[in-house]
Image 1 (cartoon, rainbow, N blue to C red):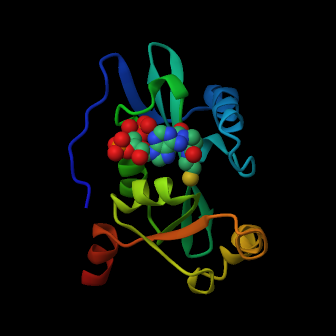
Image 2: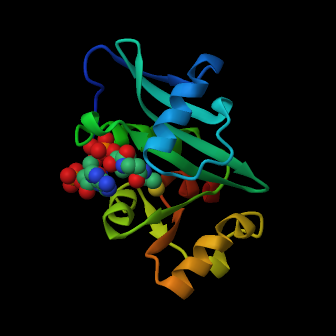
Length: 162
Ligand SMILES: CC(C)(COP(=O)(O)OP(=O)(O)OC[C@H]1O[C@@H](n2cnc3c(N)ncnc32)[C@H](O)[C@@H]1OP(=O)(O)O)[C@@H](O)C(=O)NCCC(=O)NCCS
C-alpha cells in the first residue's frame, strides 16, 4: 500500500473548505466533468496555493457509508502528489465505511495504492446503490469501464479491533 509521506509545495495549504470556496469548487468539479450533485462546501477539503484553489475532494454522506468524490487537481498541478495527499487526507477524515466510483483502469490503480479494493455493485451498502445504479447500468449496457471500490485499509482494520 501507498505510504509515502508527501508534502505540499511551498506556499500551499490543505484545509477544510469554507463558504467562500463554493464557486471555486464548482468550477474545478465542472472542469473535470465530474458528478455535479451534492457539492456541499461543508464536505470538502481543498488545497490552496497563493490565494487560489488548486485541488478539492469531498466525503459525501450516506446512511452507514461515505463516498470519496469530486477529487480534482487543477490540470497544471497534476503529477506532483497533490491528488495522493488529498486522497490520504480524506481517508483519514472518514468516519464510515468508505466507497468510491471511478472510470477506468488508471484511476482504479491510483486508488488501489491507498487501500481501495474493487467491490461488486451487489456488495455496495443499500444506501449507496441508488446513486451508483446509473453507473452500473452504463457499465452493463454500454460497457463503460466504471469501477466501484471500497476502502479496505487501516481504518477498517482499526474498526475491527474495537
Ligand atoms: C486523478 C487526479 C486527482 C490525480 O491527481 P494528481 O495530483 O495528478 O495525482 P498524484 O500526483 O498524486 O498521482 C499521479 C498519479 O495519478 C494517476 N492518474 C490517474 N488518472 C490520471 C489522469 N487522468 N491524469 C493524470 N494522472 C492520473 C497517474 O497514474 C499517476 O500515477 P504515477 O504517480 O504513477 O505517475 C487528477 O489527475 C485529476 O484531477 N483528474 C481529473 C479528475 C478525475 O478524474 N478525478 C477522479 C474522479 S474518480
